[in-house]
Image (cartoon, rainbow, N blue to C red):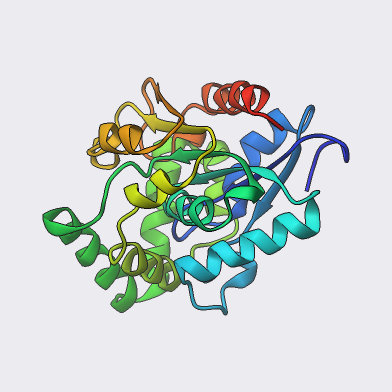
Length: 242
């Protein structure tokens, strides 16, 4: 946790195969005003020994919010974390001041599920050291050594990521988003085309939502454009009914 003890709490959920460290740019930028809480999902980081389940992850998030806050928080989830956030909002709406769904505006079913099924199979079967080397090289190439550190320094958790992909492929998430009555921000990178396929469907499903597209950003938009991403969170957090 970081930030003032009496600041409004924001809980961040990371994407697949990385850890809560991915949110370091937001911790640095938002902890001046908010109580920033980052958690690892099952199968990742400090919880690498646990099997990932969407429902169980939502339960664990509810427990974190009960323990670390007054029982309500703004929840921000990116990619895999975004799907967990929608599950959480549907199950525990009273605990969510608002939801930010980043890079998770696609229903991974039907033909859309094919590339995810292939990816999860590769992540499950190929040697982890080799997969980790590829991920490390890709992130350093994309962001440079310094900017990539929040992603690469903790290492990667391929088996946990594979389990996460398999889990979300068996669910429909627009109905879960529709079940949440509070404010929602859909936050997508302009160049993250694969995860923007159904953003209008998700926007229409939510009862009280707005969409913000981050220019020049790909899937990990909080690293691509940390200032714009953080400013969007700050503005949304100031607008929700705490």
